[in-house]
Length: 174
Image 1 (cartoon, rainbow, N blue to C red):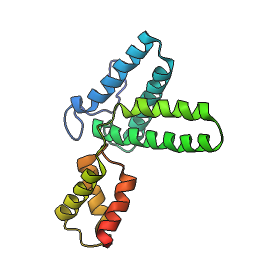
Image 2 (cartoon, helix red, strand yellow):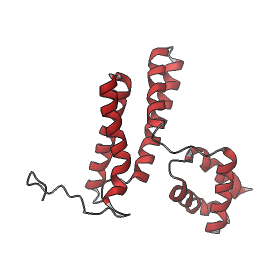
Image 3 (tube, rainbow, N blue to C red):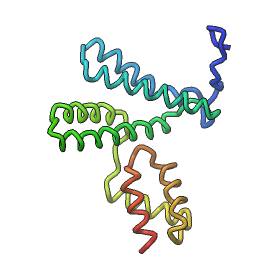
Image 4 (tube, rainbow, N blue to C red):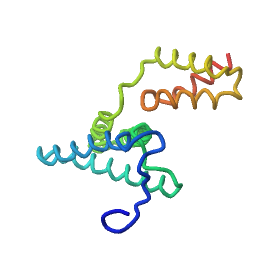
């Protein structure tokens, strides 16, 4: 039971490790919120609050499915989704002649990207794909899901899986 008398439904340990696996990235973000408040950096503060809100929503969705709170690795996927949404918005704002809104979205992308690991270069992505194909023994297009799953397990947050999917498809087809 929680201190307020309600069972929050959080297991003592996450499925993939200890409670520390869940909190490191969250703590970094919460500390950054406090720093942004002190610095009176409104853009960063509002973006980080939105990130916290998105994390809480994802935790609630996971809890509804009977899963533990998201780990740091799971959060990287959430952050990539947020960045992708903002990149799409930037394109639309640029097409619509709304430069101020496009710039605001770019600032949010930069703030969220700071919490992602360094992205892999194209050569590194191709090498990782070759390794995943060899590791899974993929022989054709029917094995594409296995290759993508292996890549996501090893390189979450480090590559754009939309681009990687096309490269995997090309590698398996040719």
